[in-house]
Amino acid sequence: MKIYVPLDSTAKALGADDLAEAIAAEAQARGIEIELIRNGTRGMVWLEPLVEIEDKGQRLAYGPLSAADVPALFDGKIETLGRVEDIPFFAHQTRLTFARCGLTDPLSLTDYQAHGGLAGLRRALGMDALRIVEEVKLSGLRGRGGAGFPTGVKWDTVRMAKAPQKYIVCNADEGDSGTFADRMIIEGDPFCLIEGMAIAGLGTGATKGYVYIRSEYPVAIDMLRQAIEIARIEGVLGASVLGSRHAFDIEVRVGAGAYVCGEETSLLNSLEGKRGVVRAKPPLPALEGFLGRPTVVNNVISLATVPVIFEKGAEFYADFGLGHSKGTIPVQIAGNVRYGGLFETAFGMPLGQLVEAIAGGTASGRPVKAVQIGGPLGAYFSPADFATPFGYEEFDGQGGLIGHAGVVVFDDSADMLKMARFAMEFCAVESCGKCTPCRIGAVRGVETIDRIAQGDAGAVPLLTDLCEVMKDGSLCALGGFTPYPVLSALQRFPEDFATVKEAAE
Image 1 (cartoon, rainbow, N blue to C red):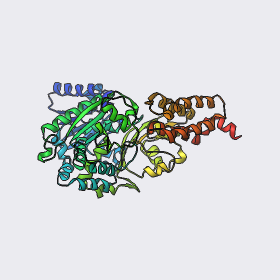
Image 2: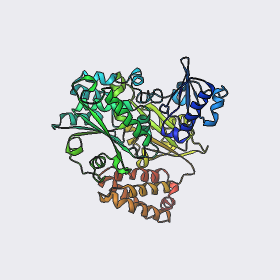
Image 3: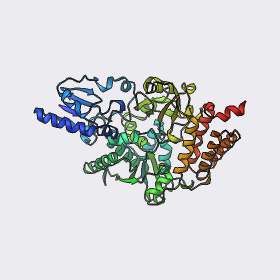
Image 4: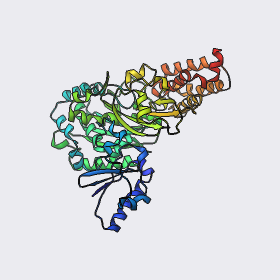
């Protein structure tokens, strides 16, 4: 009998470690032989800790459970949820990147390969660098970290660059509110990130990779370091990748927690041991990145998606999605919702379906008022925008962005003026200070919103002008995207900005 108890940070925060200990103790006391496996999460937060029991080829789920529930679990007095794959939230997903997450033992390379792992890397080893890059281009994969830049184009720039050393840098500095996909995949399926980085190395000529991960993710850091060591021992990493003539190795570097280090040039400065401030571009990191060498900087999910593209084929992956938004997107549902968690789906699902049908509306039972997509720098959408399909161009057409695909829901008790103020305050606190529009503009933004809150209608056009300056003049997306939540709150929820209504009258 195999019993799966998640080691994911969310499950651990909800008592998964105590639950695992209680299960082991109860089994020993009853003389029942079990294999206790600490797996990743299936992504349904409201059911955590979610225990799965596999017996005689059948794997059934129970949750949420606590240590106090263990005797009843062994007595068969707790009703099963059935197969995870049949739970509606899970059944409606299209799992490609997260296909193994929660299903396998995260640190078993044997388990990983039994579920398709390393098939993509083996295929890539039979291709030259140009064919590898063309495969990524054909898949339509775009950066899942926020910018949505075509991954294959970035790889091709590094491939064609002439340099004695090239690098692959994985951005795991997941700092957006309401996002957890990077952490979840590293804790639940770390080998897919390792495999994706190795394929990126083959395609670009890079022999060294770095994963820059936030210090707030201790479980993910530990899991990734263990997985890298196993990959080295098994010949997946090192001087000869899977017995080939290609070398590639990975090192983990832990960041100190600056939000701005999620921006690729700030990240590279931090990686080099410098202060995490934004670099002016050009030169692009693809030409002069880490230590001045050509560098691919990709998000965790971008790199973790590469193995499935090479295992299944670029055409298979590109067949999912909408327009120029190809493949699947791991949507992270959070905030005031009944069913929060990770929902991987093909691009194109209407926003309203995600919020009302999948997330189940608000946990408070009150009407949905606003949905912020893309982290603290993302725009606010109202129910009037719920027909908008989940896609890069479609969101851009509505004045929004997908970002890292965090979806945070608010009910009708939310004060959108306060939310706009928070966006400016957040930018002021997290600014690296390199450019004036961000460093000073965010401070002036807080002051201007406070004037509006005090009844100064004349401050409204001033706020709009300030946002335009920040958009056009900031060196990076921190200052450049802060206007998105501010202006969307102002435009879509004018009733919360009392002076807007008074000015119109």
